[in-house]
Image 1: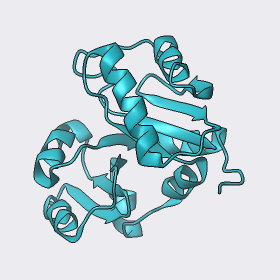
Image 2: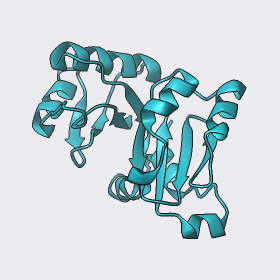
Image 3: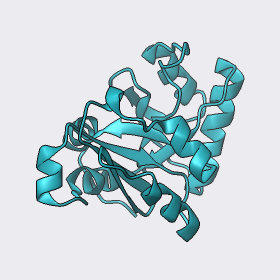
Length: 183
C-alpha cells in the first residue's frame, strides 16, 4: 500500500530536518520506496504490512519524536485520497476566483459536529472554512500572512493537531503519485 505522509513541524519554527535524514528515519520504520517531496514534510512510501492507518501514523510519530526530539504529528493519505482532495473546490466560484490562497488542513480523525461548528465559526470576511471528513479547507481572500488565522489558533479551537498544505502542493503530489488500485 502506498501512502503520502503529511508531517507537522518539519522545517518550521526552528525545527530543521534534512530530507535525506527524514527518508532514513522512515526506512528505519520498515517502510519501502521512501521519497520526500519538497522540504515541508511530505513523505511518500509503501508498506507491505497490513496495519491500521492510525497504528502506522503512531509508529512513525514515535520514531520521529525519539530521533528528532520533538512531536511530529503525522497524517497519512493514499494517493487516491490526495487526488480527490486536490480536485475539491468546496467554495463558490466567485469566492474561489477572488481568493489569494487556498489551503487544506489534515486531521487524524473526522471532525465531530462540535469541531465542525468551531471551524466554521473561524470564518470571517477574509477567511472561509469548510470541513469534509478528515480535511478542512481554508480559502483566504488576502495574503495568508495578512490573515488572523493560524494553525495554532485552529488547534486551540478544536483541541486537535493539524498540518496545512497549499493546494498547489497537493495538485503536484497528485500528478506525481497517481492513484493506483487502493484496497
